[in-house]
Length: 184
Image (cartoon, rainbow, N blue to C red; front, side, top):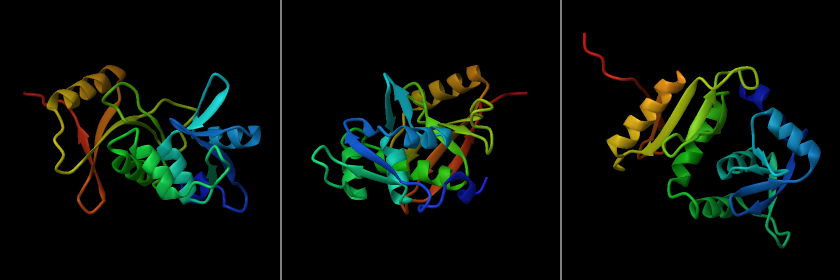
């Protein structure tokens, strides 16, 4: 799936959202439908919310306009600062999300403490389960082996492939497939 298939042109679609504590809330029904069909956001207690990384991506693509509680526009950098306040790895998570979306994948929030994202193969979102689970980290930042081992065990039990996404010092994302070591 190409980028153009995944996202409509900016003249066709622009959602409006309100900055919230854990992301960006969307209230307009047509925006909610358009975003959820493309694999964005979650709905909980009749409230549709975009995760910060989703909102940053859509703001960058000029598909989302975010306002604060006073009604003032929220710029990309301010949105990133809000995200950084709730996630110390905000920049790395956003870059991994942006890279995967730009490659045509639907990227959904992970589960558990170790898994950051679920990745749906091109064209599979809504039809099949996620094929890959992603753990993201930064080059040079210590990552406990116990966390990686737990993530791998979780992936194996779900019959998914584990991918470690590493943001290097230049901001590039490098992907590593992880599998258990087997002796023959």
